[in-house]
Image 1 (cartoon, rainbow, N blue to C red):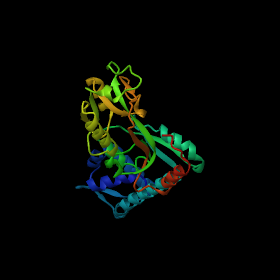
Image 2 (image 1 turned 60 degrees about the vertical axis):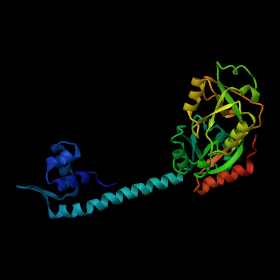
Image 3 (image 1 turned 120 degrees about the vertical axis):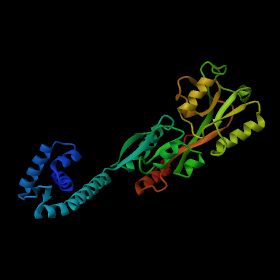
Image 4 (image 1 turned 30 degrees about the vertical axis):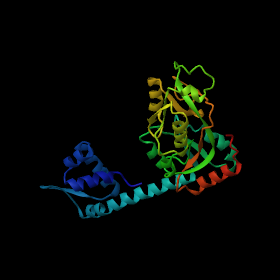
Length: 299
């Protein structure tokens, strides 16, 4: 857009010296003089003149200096608007994906409804399952990505996003491979007596709070250890390192190679679904409506 030699000209005008301008621009004084000569030749104008006290602007240079800032600012705004228009034409749904919130369930949805969005592409955006930073990721819905698919019974999550339920995941138990229960095909609740069960601390999840209350009331021989309110890999590592058992879900069976995930003779479940921004744009809302019309949950 604008001639970038104007940047050199502005530096010379502000510094009153080729040498000082060179230091400011991290180039040599010779390069500054060559750029100034090229600018003056291109404009067919004398912009500066030497004086005993340094470089000063000619009358023509003063006018160019006054308008240069406008030219630069206007050029940047024009480029920004052009890029925004290009992005608007590039119809893409960005889908977040992580170890605990993989994008595969979204892909299953996509192939059910993508005929309604023939001009759209998908772009997968990786993010970290960090229990300290996950709320910041949820707040990026609508900016960093349009959708996430994940387990969602968190009051903190639901205060930051919209949630369209797709089904229920069974609650299961993960144990280290060398654990006494690892060889069983299915656990009874009594198998957990005497064990320390790791699960999220009370207060954020209604389903998990129900499970905790039920276990504490009817199965007090199971000791409960609080984990952070949102799982990340560190929680699975602690399970593997301590020999404790971990309350998990069926879709996380392959998260940690040192753990075995087992079904239990209980009816505990938790919802999963589609997460999107509280201020979602129209195309995102249209996608959610299309899912609502066509999706048949398999829970």
